[in-house]
Length: 323
Image 1 (cartoon, rainbow, N blue to C red):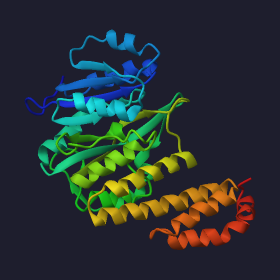
Image 2 (image 1 turned 45 degrees about the vertical axis):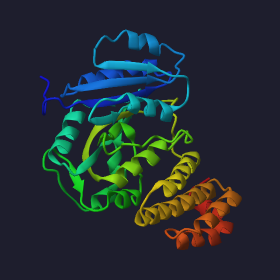
Image 3 (image 1 turned 30 degrees about the vertical axis):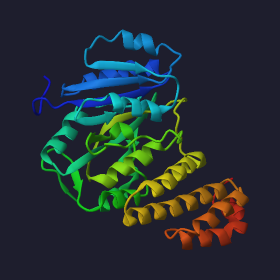
Image 4 (image 1 turned 135 degrees about the vertical axis):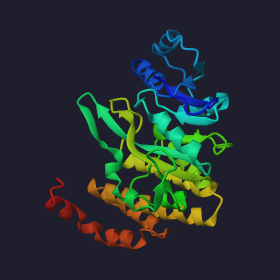
């Protein structure tokens, strides 16, 4: 039986898609299977050349609306979805992922009971053809060190301090749009950056975190599919996109405190790229990124130590099994 938490609450669920017809129906059905039903689903087809139009045409549920644009990237597609949205709340789902049935219900319960909270995100779990992988929060134990309090309703925790500074300092950056749920009013005027082919989610979500009180749910309510055509994979290139997003974020944040927090993360990211290059025994690019990191406060000493050790890094990695 569907549960309605309050009359006339409407959520706009935005699904950008490009050539994911083989997954799209499953994603949409995971929204229709939610335990709340007062939502609209907005699918933005980013110029797909597969059977995406036919899949959409075959779904008759009146809550589904779709728009087709010329291929412009996921940022433009998500921005178009937000322009078309009519709901008080906004959620995103990627066309190759899916939600567990209580996602919207649990996130709504927090926002309806916590007027000062504008954003709620959740844990998620990756899966592939072999089954499910560990929950993402299990790789981010320092999340538990942030000061929080229980939400008035639901299973969430409300971050009591400056959510932006707390979350940008974590080992892993928790910025995954399919886990996100926020008040439309909080995101007013924000857009995903079309100049970023990756990590535009980091830039967008950190700006949201800077505007409001934030809560999270430790239960994995999103299932993220791993497959050969995923657009984002961990490694040096992904970290370089994160760096670009952080550099833009440094320009876009308003407060000096948030700018200092971004700069600390930039220094850490530069040193991280330098370290990854050292693992690949690419000592010149490694040194270049470590030198850049020296210009930022957070990892200056660490970067200097690694920079001085670069000449013997191949020997260290060889002895530690890094052949």
